[in-house]
Length: 130
Image 1: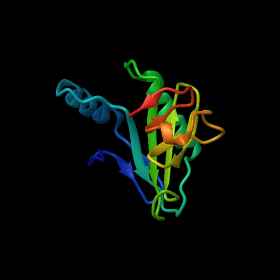
Image 2 (image 1 turned 60 degrees about the vertical axis):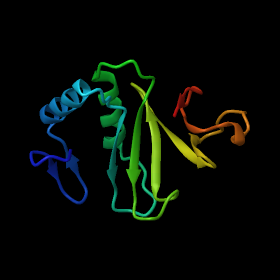
Image 3 (image 1 turned 135 degrees about the vertical axis):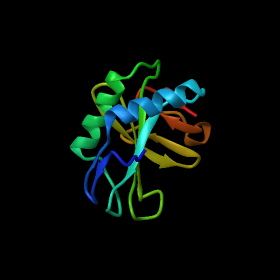
């Protein structure tokens, strides 16, 4: 996506779920896996709306996969890192990640490991997304 059959405006995006699923299946047959979603918000420092959270959690619940979470990235108008929201969605919630040298980690508290030991993305439960 986005596709011509999606409904969108400056403040809303409603995907054609049938076309979206067909596109994901086609890419899966080519060896690519759906791991999350991204979109833009017309604000400097973006955060997920209730609709964003509900949508990514529903997508996680209703998808067939063996992942522990889906990524959600929202791009705002400010430069990174403040212009990015990155989170990991489960069936029930969306956990924000925060930037650190070399990637992102869970926003509230995180792991006791030293930042220098981490690479890539860390989920709310300590699983790594690299």
